[in-house]
Image 1 (tube, rainbow, N blue to C red):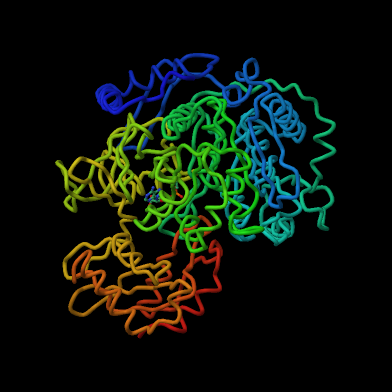
Image 2: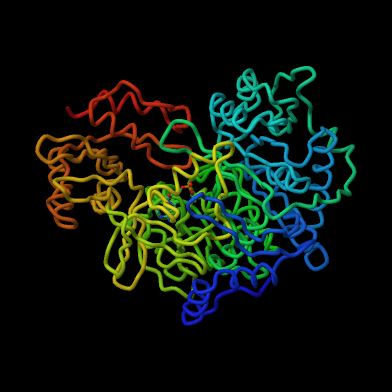
Length: 636
Ligand code: WTA
C-alpha cells in the first residue's frame, strides 16, 4: 500500500500529467498494485458521459472488507483499527484491533445472514457514532447487502422517506444516543418513522443509553443476544466491481432527497488513494476525522479510506463543546492524533471561544489538518492555522461532494503550497474545467465559471437509486458531456482553484456576478462579526439586491447597530467594491442550518423576499426554531 504517495511538487506535476494523458493506465496500475482482488478486470473504464453511464474495473471481483480487514491481519492484526472515544470522557475508550474488528464484523455479518439478509438487500442504519455503526456497515459490505446510513439526527419523516425510497428490508438502530449532556431517544423516532414503511421486516436494536424503549412484537429484536450467539467465521460475498456498495442520501434542489449510489471497486480504489495522499498517511499515524459517519465524509474518510490503508481511525461520539469547549484539543492530545479533519463551521464556533482552550493542550503530534464541507473563510483559515496547526501543519482544504465519493481538489500536504481559502489543485486523475454561461469552456487562468469535471474518476456515484433520469438531468445535462458539480469556482493566476459556492448562491446585481462566499468573507473581517449569510432579493433597478443576515460576536452585541451597518458596508466596498454593498442588514442570533452545517439559503431568500408561504421541508434543519425569530425581525 505504499505505492502511491506523492512525494514532491515536480512528482505531482509528472503524475498529474500522466494521469490525464492516460487515465486508464494510471488507475489500472493503482488498482493493480494496492488492493486484493478475486479476479482482475477486463476493462479499466467504460463510459458514456451523455447517458451518464460509467463503469470502472468491469469484470473484476472483490470484497471491500477483505481489503479493509482480512488482508491486514498478518501484519497488523494487533494494531488498532478503531479508537473509539465516547461522549463522556469518564467512560473508557475502546481500542479495536484489526483482529478484533475481523471477529466483530464476522459475527455481525452472520447476524445479518441469520435475519435473511442477502446480497443486494437494503439495510438502513440509524445509529449514533458508536463502534457498532462502523461494524454494521462493514458487515453489510461483507455479505453484499447495500447499506444506507441515515444520520441519527434526522426526524421520523426524513427517516421514513429514505427507508421507503430504497425499500429497506432491515433497519438497525439504538435505544438512544448521547450528545453532550443530552440523551436522545432514537428508538421512538424509529417507531414513528416505521409506521409508514411497509418494506421493513425487522429492526435490530443496539443498547447504548439503556433508556426504556418499546419493542414491537415480531418486528424488533435486541441485537446483543443474536450477536453473542453468532459464529465469527464469515466467508465474504464475492462482489462484481459494479455491484452497489451503499446508498447515501443528499439533498437536492427539490424536496426529495437523492439516493446517491456508490459501487464496490471504484469507490474503494478512489477513497483509499485519496486518503493516503491528501492526509500524507504513514503507517503509525493516528488519524481523526470529526464528521459523522452519516455523511459521505464519514463513509470515505472515517471508514473505508483509512481502513483500506490499514490505518488507525478515531471515532468520536461526542460534540466539540462537551464537557468543555476543549474536547477536540483534549482528544488530540490524549491519542497523539497526527491528522485532524473537521469542518469550517466547527472551526468558527471554536474560534469564538477563548484561545486558552486550545493553548492549554499539547497539539504537537499534529502533522496535517483538514477542512471540508463548505468554503473556509479567511478568518477561520488563519485561526485554524495559527492556533491548531501552529503554522506548521499544512491545511488541506478539500473540495468534494457526496456524488464524487472522494476528495477531488485539495493540496497534497508538504507537496502543494497552500493558499488561504483555496482548495488549490486537482488530485491526479481529476480534470476540472470552468464553463461560461454560453456553455463554453474557459481556458486560461485568472478566471471563474461553473465547475465541471471532464473525465470520469473511479469514485463517482453511478446513479440516483431508482431514478437514473434524475441523475442524468441533475449532473450531465447543463453541460453536455461533462459532470456539472453545481459549484462555481475561480482559477487564480497559477491555476489554483477556489470554490466560490453553489451556483445557486450566485447573485447577479446590476449585471455583475457576485458570489456570496467572498462577501461573507469580507464581512467576517469585521471584528464584531461571528458569521453571516448573504442572499439576493428582487430589486426594481438592479435586478437583485443583497440582504445580509449577520450574527455578532458577544463583544459586538453592545455596539451601535447603525454604525455597525455602515462599517460593514465600508468593509465590503473596500474589499470587493461598492457593487457588493448590502442593501439590508438584519442582525440575527442564529442561521438556519442543515445538520451538516450548511446554511439553508433557500429559507433566507424567501424571508428576504417577504414570502413566508412555503419554506419546503424544514425537518432536516438542525435548528428550525430560529426561523420564527428571523421572520419577525425581517427588514421590510
Ligand atoms: C461544498 C461534502 C468549498 C460544495 C464532502 C459542494 C465545499 C458541497 C468544500 C458538497 C470545500 C465541500 N470548499 N466548498 N473544501 N467541500 N464543499 O455532498 O458546495 O455534503 O458541492 O459533500 O459542499 O457537500 P456534500
